[in-house]
Length: 395
Image (tube, rainbow, N blue to C red):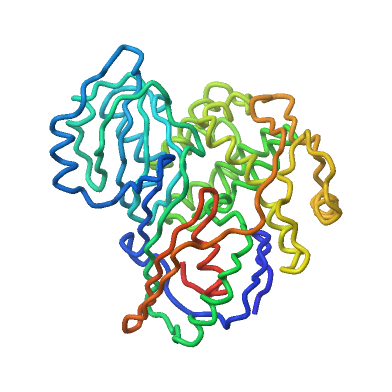
């Protein structure tokens, strides 16, 4: 059994044998419903009462209510990609939209969204396959990352060899919680590049960061993989121009970066700024996350503290195990104060080391294992899946 996944810095804490299964064969196998700040679940189902309320929405009380809040339900879309499609239909910038938390792509998910100075009637007219908007209301405040209480999950693991006695023991073991690792989403699913890009950013090496962002290959379509490989071999203006023709239009972020490099070949800092700020921050956060995961993996149930630091340039009183990880990774807290892009600097913070799994239930149905549970914000469902499968699921 592989005890530590080096990509994510994860070690397993449960003692049950690994369960083989297939994870996310269909989007319907992974359902996520967000719990907002008021404790209300943003349900996937669109009830008759909700439809009636949306048909006769409450009117804007004053001009100070500049935001429209709504529930976004999506299938096979990342949060960013869904909002990009909506903003295109409205002919407005994607920066007008904010959300409390990102959601998985290969899934059916619900989440809260706020839109700044958008016409409600225009928003309600939008029809996009596998995207639904509901629960419209006006607000004076925009949503910020973290403006939620948690998420509830219903997950189907197909072709499972799960046994009742194993699941019974697993349920008993996780009553005391599980290590609060950052999941694969933080590091990239199709291409595990977030950490590598972020690592280059914190040393202000934007040429390296952009090169990784554009050329690192992963689990993508063959045409994309080939285009990235060609660009890596022919790095420069001609390569940028050819890549702009070969990169599919749905790779809009990469294409925006390439367009900038076609105009200003050596302006890698400017090219990085063509990537939305939230995604750039995700790159830097992924470095923080990896350090946290790796440090947490060196603890046991007996000696784990309640919190561990998320390293930043203001981090102090760093535990010995984290100092060891920093030395091993050759990273200093001061690296998180980025000089050329100061808005990417991270002061640091702390994160709970243990997550509590609420309302955990399971059902073995023929060859499928169905799980239901809720987690507080910031915790990943993949933490539970990885503990259960010991990373043997086919993703």
